[in-house]
Length: 275
Ligand SMILES: Nc1ncnc2c1ncn2[C@@H]1O[C@H](COP(=O)(O)OP(=O)(O)OP(=O)(O)O)[C@@H](O)[C@H]1O
Ligand SMILES: [Mg+2]
Image (cartoon, rainbow, N blue to C red; front, top):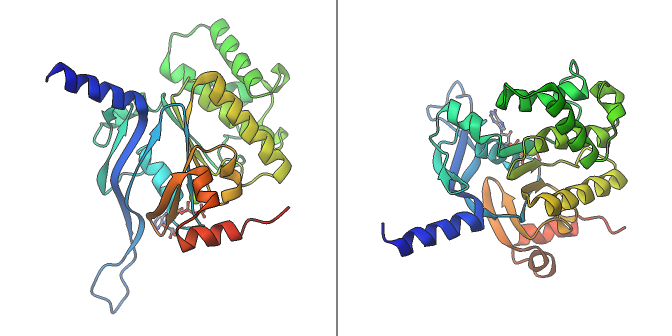
């Protein structure tokens, strides 16, 4: 390959940590007794976008439009029907289960429900250290302890949390623990699937500010999913608006807020409560 072309590709890798192209995931519906044809829920129906390194892309849309299916497909927790996923310049669409497990160190997901996503049988130390032990079996106890306490303090929790169980924490604190669990592996990209939707509005702001600080300190990239446009305004550089499995509008966050071109986006904006 000519040197100039190689340089061009490298530059693109650095610019876009994630690129998805024409991704599709249809769920088959049960065939009715009289119907001869299969029907599908077109949860993700030909979606393409990219997340720039160190930036935040917002993905917004009403309930059921396919956001979580898309998030899980990007991590290959759900297999796409067609399309491709490039992560850090590498096509990960057809990687084997073993290889994809290694990629997940760099590509972590945080779920909406801070109650269901933490194993109630583990202490906070157990929850946060699990990934580190999986990825480096030989890690010494002292190093493990240091890494876990450091990341806990980075998300605003003290050492006293280490021996406690998830049910002893509030929703916001649990989401901090989920963030710590993801960050301890030093990922490049976090897919945040409605990370604050289950939290009170005042707590939402705290978690969003924490995510903004962590991004600045660590140079992280985010794909931030929300159904509420007001949440994405403060954290996202660009926004994609999703409806029924498709992107209907995308652009710089301010442009979407000031001058939405799609009627659906205009309605999403109207539904934001004026405080
Ligand atoms: N495992 C599944 N089997 C069949 N249909 C599914 C499955 N998971 C999701 N769906 C359907 O796919 C569509 C998209 O669901 P998805 O959970 O991705 O939406 P969402 O945008 O994340 O919604 P919410 O905002 O409520 O979280 C919905 O119509 C849903 O009913
Ligand atoms: Mg969802």
